[in-house]
Amino acid sequence: MSWLKRMVLLGALGLAPALHAQVDDSESEAETEVVVPDSAALQALGVRLARLREAAQQTDSVRTAFEQAELAIERAREARQLGDEPRALRAEQIADAATTLAERRLALAREREAMRIARARLEDAHRSQGAAREALKLAQKRAAEAP
Amino acid sequence: MNTLRLALGFVLLCGACSHAPRTRTELDAARLAHAKALHVKERAPELFQKVTEAEAAAKAAGDDEATRADQLAIARLWLEAAIAECERADSAGARLVIEREIEGVQAQTQRDQASAHALDLELERRAAAQIAAQEIKRALERAALTQGQRPKLDKATETGAARALWTRAQLVIEAARALGASGQDLEEAQKLGDAARAALPSKPDVALDLADRALSRAWIALGPVRAIDGAVSDGEKQALREELDVQGAALSRDDRGLSASLSDMFTPQDRLSASAPRKLARLCALSSAHPKGARRFSVSAASEAAAARRREQLSAALQAAGCDGERMGIDARVQAGSALELTFFAY
Image 1 (tube, chains in turn blue, orange):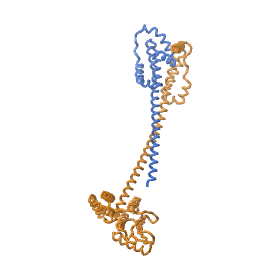
Image 2: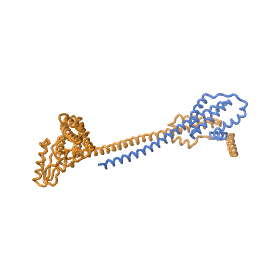
Image 3: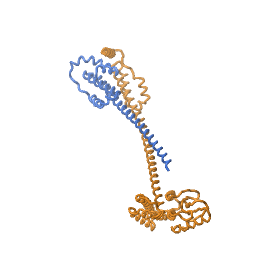
Image 4: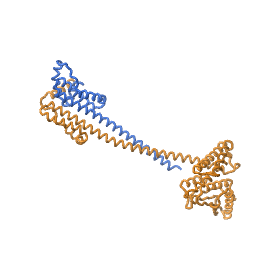
């Protein structure tokens, strides 16, 4: 994720404190190299996000939520790395909510696509019905005119 | 571009680093109103509960600005998820209505297509029946003449006429059998039909005569079966009309019943025409095939004496054809023309 995009997203999410902490913490990153493993909750979120990755490329509304979730996960990792567990837990909550939002928006997008197809099918069905009605009228006319 | 990027970064960083209140203190009013309109609270209670909890956590955070901002962000995300869920449910409900409408429209389309197809088939059947009737008419007309009187035709045409008549006879035989007819008339009809088929390839004119007689006998065989039921059915009326029509008769219906008028039955000298005896024999057979009610012949001539002569000629011919005279009276009228009329009162 680009630096600029990340800044904009952080602002949009109201996650400025995280950025603030990150800017401060970045100076000490070089000194602490111990990697804290992801919590079970983060791992589960990772699995859910992996399922959404492809759909997120195709649907704007899903992509926005997807990126919010990714950013929050990153933030949770950073906070945990720094030993700030409350902030890490809040970031996990944000990631959970954003992932859920991405899932629901994906479901909504799919439903809207199904609706679009249903409307097209309805139009098609009406067209076919019109043609069938015309054919029937012609057949009735032929039958009436036949000796 | 770089200047713009720097400026934007500066603005965001200032916002992020400032200690002044910079987060929204509550959820967006418009989105909340939208959620209310969608009845999110009732329709997505689990998601809405999380909104409430996050809002409460934001309030509880007090001066902890970071916690407060995070909790509000969480509340906003859950609210959007709940809205998306309700919009999806609304869309699914609307789609279900459309799907049902599609089913209805498709069912109507299928009914219309089936009706149109049935009409087309009926038209084809009628056209085929007309062609067959024309063929039979020509064949019967030819069969009414003696072999010497018949116009010369090529063998294929002769064979075609004989085959048409044989097919008709065979159909009537099969119908009589299906209706439960039996006895000597049916056996005789079958024998004549078999003989006609055997003669078809080599002697089509002989086959034509045999098929004509087979048809008459098959009609006679049908009579006892039809006599069982009291009332004349619509099917019987239709059958009689068709059979009289292929005899070349002009049909009319009035309060007396169904009348068939055959022209050219008498010569100007008040004698029966060459084809009349065979045609009368067929009318007799048809009369046996449709036995319900009385029927009456009517002959007309320009004078009383001529009409009487025609009645005499007709009576003799009917007797020769083995017609049941008891129910067949003959009226003689003074009227121009050589037509002969037979009225079926019950049909």
